[in-house]
Image (cartoon, rainbow, N blue to C red; front, side):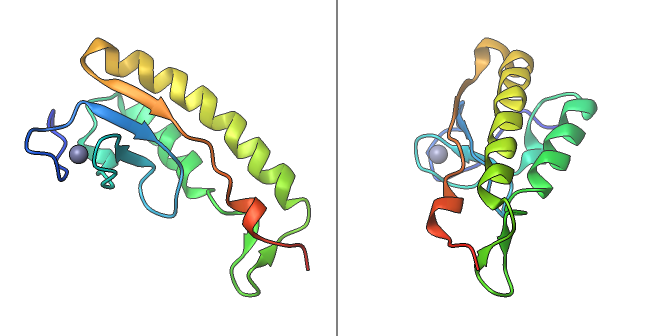
Length: 114
Ligand SMILES: [Zn+2]
């Protein structure tokens, strides 16, 4: 566990954004660079929870056909609801040293059902 997050900013960033993606769901809120989740100073339990949640990102998209899977919009909604819980827990564990913002996933809107 390290206590420094490297991004494009001159100093290690303390302004973070939680946004699920096919990459790690953690970004610098200033320069928008993707950050390594494993560099976060958080408990292994929460880390696991974030990984499990992050891995299911995009399960509403059928990547073979570039369309939404059945009830894809609902799946994304559900994922976003879980994001909020993750966000609260993460905010709690990071404490006052970090600023954390949350950005919901809106990718399902870009896809159509088959
Ligand atoms: Zn940065």
